Image (tube, rainbow, N blue to C red):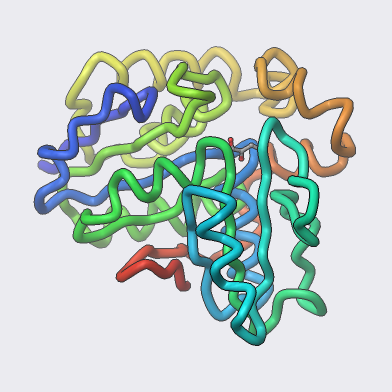
Length: 233
Ligand code: MLT
C-alpha cells in the first residue's frame, strides 16, 4: 500500500526524500490555482522562476507573458500578476507564462528534481488525485505556506486530497493534522478560507469571486506536471 505524507512548509522539507516519490506542490491562494487555470486555458507551458530578474530574462522571447507577484500584488513594471483570472483563453492560449510568486514558484523549484512533480489546487483536485492513484507511488504533499510558515488553506487542501486517496496510508502526523482539519472545515471551503491569514491579505486586493474560485473544486481537468524547467498538461 503506498503512503502519503504532508509537509506543511517548504522550510520543513527534506529534499533527500523525493527519490521515487510523487510530489505535489500546493499553493491554493493562489499560485497553483493560477497555474492550473492557465494550463487549462491553453498555455503551452508555465515556467516557474524564483526572482523578478530571472523572469525579466525572458523578455527577449516572443509569445512569453511575464508575471510577478509579491505580497499578493502584481509587481510594478510587470504586465501580469498571479490572478487565475489574468489568464483567460484569449490571453494565454499558445503562450508561455513565466511566473514568479512569493511562495508557490519557490516551492516548485525546491522539489524540481522529483520524478513526478504535480501541481495541485482545489480547481483540479479530482484529476490530480486520479493521477496520484494512477502513479501508485508514495506521495508527498508539499504546502507552500507563507514565508516558511504553514498556512491553513494549503493544509486543508492536503487534507482534502487525503480524503480522496482512500487507499494510501498516512505516513506522518502532518498528514493526520491536515486530514482532521479538512474534516472540520469541509462543508464550506470558502468560509474556511475567510479564517486564513492570506485571505485577510488578499481580500482588499482581489475580488470575492476570485477567492471563491480558488476554493471551488473541479473547475478544470488538467494535471500540470513539471519537467525540465517547464510545467505542462
Ligand atoms: C504565493 O506564491 O505566495 C502566492 O500565490 C501569493 C498570491 O499571489 O496570492
